[in-house]
Amino acid sequence: MAATGRRQSFNIMIVGQAGRLQYEALLFAASLRHSDPGFEGRLIVAEPQPGPLWPDDPRIRDTEIRGLLAELGAEIVPFESRVFGAAYPQGNKIEGLATLPEGEPFVFFDTDTLITGPLGAVPFDFNRPAASMRREGTWPVIELYGPGYTAIWKSLYDRFGLNFESSLDPSRPDEYWQRYLYFNAGWFFHRCPQEFGRRFLSYAMSIRDDPPAELVCQPLDPWLDQVALPLVIHSLGGGRPGPDLAGLDGDVSCHWRVMALLFARESDHAIEVLNTVAGPNRMKKVLKRYEPFKRMIFQAKGRRVRAMFDRNALPPQEKMIRNRLKKANMWMR
Image (cartoon, rainbow, N blue to C red):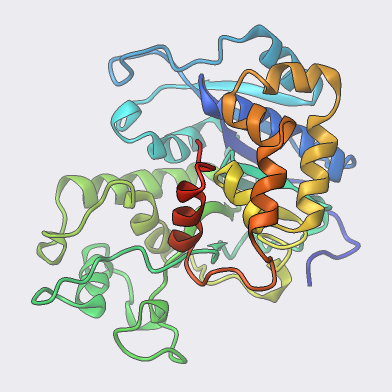
């Protein structure tokens, strides 16, 4: 079930900064206002500020983009990067939670997302946090003579005093990656961003700075957020999302990630929303400054990518789609 008739009020957070994310933030805001014009909460664009962890100014300096975001009801709220910054920009989603008001329910979305349906009618249970299950078995990377999934994940649950067994999916076999709680960090939610953010930051720093011995050979860049996230959600009484949240990564939201992937694999409705919200002249003028948007949305490359794939028979792994796009010189980010 994607949505119910009962609407909830909650805040949304995305990250916005100079470069690619400022254009993605504009698309996100436009898609929210188009697909859910009655949305009652705040749309907060968390913006990292200049500081020692950023060699360049990360703020959105394009005044037209800032103006359009404001017209679409988005609020740009600054935050200081005290832990991650340019060395690990995925950490913005962790530190940026500090911009949200304490005690008010929130949903975080990666900025490379389109809202394609009535988000406010999704029946979130904010007391039971969850996150996106649109993921592949990217972490951990199992070495031939190294520890397996159970040993690696259990070491993390033990680190934070969490019950490992209760996190498992017993319908999946032992040492199969889907048995273990693992999310895509493209969306997550909870009743309090401050509580969630403090724990997320604490866990991520502990894993980064002092990983358990079982992680000695494991890559944490860019996976750190997705390693810490299931631990945070489990510790706060959450888990895998139920069928009531099927609209996320379904008919209510679309985490497209790379524009070429959007055209290759997403629904006709998602493409329709993209073209509708990008179409007005003021939006088009700004979005065309970003070369992948210019070529994919406003020139022929997006249509050509779409013709390369059958959405009903996509390759089983994203890597196979990426390789086909790169071979055809259609991969750009």
